[in-house]
Image (cartoon, rainbow, N blue to C red; front, top):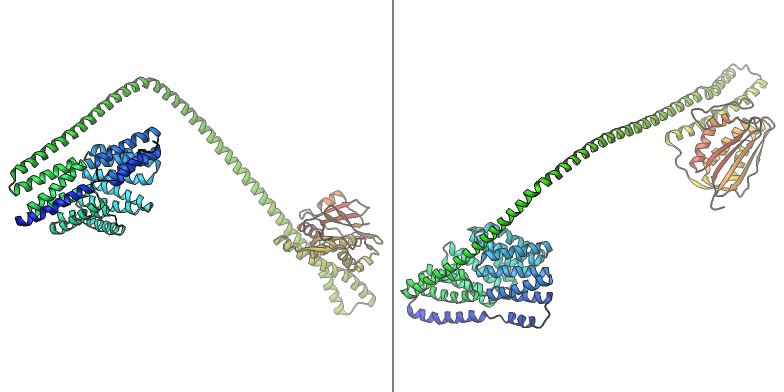
Length: 635
């Protein structure tokens, strides 16, 4: 224990510290804001200014802070400023918390939380979480307290509010310490101290140091805790925070009691009492007076010990009365609530008969709707099933038609192979046998040669058409390379190519197409179309007849007309020309053979080039095949 002379040296220092604490309690910033508030209109800016004053006083003078927060609440409600109201309720909740009235503090904190959460006003919502967490902490609900402080910290992190994060870390460390969660208390305490030291905020630094002092004090490291409490006191004085000053002082008083240094304990506790009176913290005063009574008794000053104990008891009685009044008020509220609930229950009973009738009517209506719904559902299922059957039948018919088409194509190919190709090949085989026997005269050989030449030409044409047609059936007409077609040149080339065949029947082919006639189509396709149509005309034109090719322009199209003086066709024959399942072949006027695929090829190639093929004919009056093709834009 320090000697009496040493104590005499220590007391002036402590007294100066006490005076410094009182001086630091002055709030020039708050006074400046108060002066400004008297010069502006009572709008939302006025409410905001009152809230700023309340916040500035919150850790220095709880009573004055509460006064300004209450004024802010009343004015915000009057002008319907919800943000200002949420802020004011937060400040009122914190002021009551500082005064030790946790019931009112919790009530206002919850009101603020409801408003700020509905507005999603994050800065004040974070403060609401802090207030609720602090009150839970005061009621020894440390896990709940830490949960709310974590929510507060997450919002501050989202808003990039480093000061808010630092305060949240302090609160989490403090709750962990109170809840005997030592590891968490140390981790969050040192994290908070490091974070707040970087910020340079003396209030937050003081809080961090005080919490770490608490942790080391509880584990028995009293000297180490005193170092932290002294550092906390220094930072609190720099921050002018009477709350941290008072709590650091009373912790130092308690720590020196553990070291049996009673006079040092008295000095710190006396200063703590003076500051707690400024704060109006009755709970803290009661605790400090009890500690003072013990220290006075240990140094033999029993009179002061008795006085401190009496003040402690009186404060406890006052707190008990206040809490009892609060509980009585709560009981009154509960009674009134029960009374109103009884009235409501009576009204409910009176309405039950009517409501029962309404429920019955609704039930009958519901059952009727269910029955109607089931009938509709069954009808819908039946209808959809029929629709599905119709679609399935349609698909089956389509598949059947496709299979029949494929079957007709197969039969047609086999017919061609067995008839139109086999005959010329058989004739060629017979001639080869005659040649081997060297039994033909020159005159007979000449006739056979002429007939065989015609058959080979027919065979060649048939093979070309068969290959083209077969490929089209398997792949479709692909690779259409449209370009400018000189129609006169195509007609003339084919006229010269087929002159020999025409001369055998003394048929004259006239090319009356203008050299300027141009179409836009695949040149190779047009060549095949013209050749097959001319061959068809030669085949069915009598000896001495004629074939005329003309061209006419109509809108954006070019129309080629191949007109012969042949035997013509009936309407029934025309209708079968371009269908594979009804297609027929007929020998020419001199028994010329053919596979009958030429016209099918013509139709497919014409349509592939965005054109159309039409026929006009009468028996005995010849035929006219008209090919319509797109007109070249370069004409």
